[in-house]
Amino acid sequence: MRLYSLDFEVKSVTRALAPDRDTSYQYFDEEKAQGEIKEMGTEAGKENLKGRVRQFLAAYQLKRMGCDLNQQNKKIRSKRIRSTNVSADTAAIAYYQAHIDKYRDLQSLLAISERDGSLSDDQLREVRTLVKEVFHDMLSDFKGIICTTSVASANLTVRRFRAELVFTDEAARQSELGSLISVAHYQPHAWFFLGDTAQLKPYVGEDSKATDNPFIRQMSVSLIERAVLAGVELGWLNITHRLRGSLCPLSSKIHYGDNMRIAGSPHWKWPPSTVAFATEVTKLLGPSANMLYSSRVVVQFPFASATPAGTSSKNITHVRWVLDQVKKMLQNSALTEIDSKRMASILILPLYKAQVDLYREKLHNERIQKRISDEDFRRIEVRTLDSAQGEERDVVIVDYVQTHKAGFCMDPNRNCLATTRAKQCEILIINAGMTNSPQAKNSKIGQILAEAAERGIILKVLSCSNCEDPSHKDDECDQKFESKRCNWCNEIGHSRATCPKVQCRNCRGLGHVEPNCPNPKLCQQCGQQAMAGHRKTCLGKRICSVCWECHTGDPCNACAHCRKKGHKASGCFLNPASKKKPKHRPLKCYCCAELGHKAGDCPNKPPRLG
Image 1 (tube, rainbow, N blue to C red):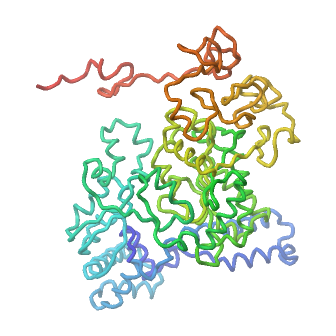
Image 2 (cartoon, one colour; image 1 turned 60 degrees about the vertical axis):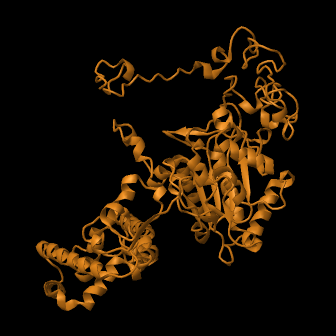
């Protein structure tokens, strides 16, 4: 039985037993509204409203808005009415009808409602009180399984249900206090806490982090993670029933210590639909793939750029390429669900909210312009990665958005979630510039890129740096570069990718960037060609990061930006980044919460006891 909050269930039962013709919620009559809209569009409808243009437009728009709002409400309501046969309100009504003689007062009030058509406010409050008694008795006598949230289970009436076993799912996503609700209010034979500490942690909002609450760090620790930190021996379910094809090995190696295994035979791992997906991915990769079939691909856009949108970020180049690939997938009849003829579902997971809004806007425009049918539009879902816990689709596209910094994208829990949502095909958009720093290179993102490079599943898409379109390059662009300013030399008329003063990070040559370097990949420690396992043989050697010559001591005193001697890149007047003012955050004392000093220098610091 599904159980929401008790107040919601009581209102649902009250609405069903005693409907109020004047004040109760009335479902929108969509057929009637669509009929009126069609009638307005006929010549007779226009003739009736002739001379009243404003009234006609207002009536037409109101009806159209009503239809649109009803469609949105349908999506919201569908999640709750999808399983009404096992919902708590349905069970309560059935219990009342089976024991109607026990509830004479409720029966009398319902008779008044049926006779008069409505009840007074006092009578409605009395009905809700009597309905709560029905829930009280129904839960006391109920024998079965109840699915509800931890907060709803703490209600005094809900606790009338005597549970013999208590299961808490997604316990690694729940705070310790939330998990302890069932421990405090129930006395079963056993408690079971199920979750994955490698995936998302309990959510703590930015507003909470900004307070002086000393228990903020504890709020982001789950009960399961606390047990792991305490050294408690836990049971492990290391078999995945989701990742088909070649999706499992990389996720298992990076996030689970190579302990995760697939369930089933080779036929289970490679059903015909997954083979079809892998064939398309292999065609996309071309000759660079080291595997016969690959169901995962890492895509990089060397010339793309992420633009800030408030506190978020967006990347139009990524959106255009993804939508182009999605439309190709929608037209391929071989890409179906596993062991089914139904067409595959697609989930797009950007890490930034602004990118989610951009995807939804572009998809909506494609639907309006009839480039994507309504049926295909319903197969696509866009949501942030943080809201994808527990989700799975046949195709999952994870967009990291950024191009030259990693930030919170280095979070290991988010990367684990990103690489375990797909069932048959996975596309990761991770640009190489995100791992420029040593910290990012050693993070989960760096490990994913290293594994992808070893498996040959990295696809580099060269896009136009002027109009940010992945369908052509700079020299093929029809738009002028007049308003384009180079972020390397600060001159107008070209981009950084085509700047004659830019320096390649691979060979240190001028006039091109690393993705377009004609030279083979060079070792950044010794300058020799980097082959497989080369880094292990040249550890300890150093090469000057400025002149690219081997010499001992500090790097030569030359600017890495303009290559002139006498100053560093941080002080180069040609470097736009050198003109940015550093952010100065005032010191804040964690003892008295005042600004201007640290806790070690706090004059109000209490004396240490003992």
